[in-house]
Image 1 (cartoon, rainbow, N blue to C red):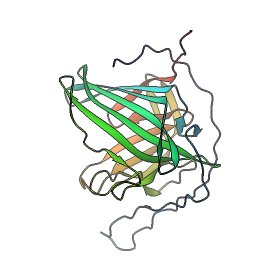
Image 2: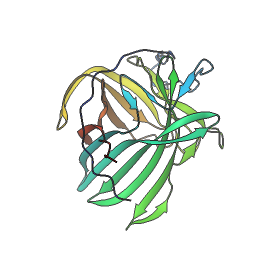
Image 3: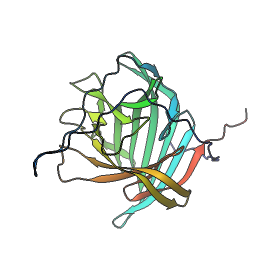
Length: 245
């Protein structure tokens, strides 16, 4: 299915609030001691919602971000769209966020990511993803797919409503499949993109014990969400215009 034609409009600012406190990861007392990440979250007080937002993440149907960039000699186009669809995982209604990635104009991957907001503080949790990898227009695999509450997987904290500089936590907790974790390395950066100039940005470093040498960086802007995903930068963002009946 081809992506829909869209008209994008800019967003107003959003309100910062917090529900779950993510402690600062312990600082090593000895050189060479491994870093530690928070992998257990007390969600017993959550009022779950499949729609919501915090300063750095928007989970509202119709919100879309478009990214462009290059990975080596390959031109990459990425569209992230919050869909009107939901999926229930372990009794929690989650919202589906679709990512469509193309390389040199050819569809490479479609993933349907599952998110829910923990109210009243509006921390965003990640409950899994359905992944379809493509080659020559045909599905070739489902690498990285996982769902919370299956095969030992658990929901991870994707974006807290009040990120603390230096905190470390798991976004994905699917042993042997997906174990992405982040460290918040800056909360005062600036970035200029084709979609605008952003300040007081949040920067995260992503790693995984599954690939110990791999590192990626993301930058988040208040009221927008991700504005840079490693080599990809934001070119457009906003809500898809509703079609007239």
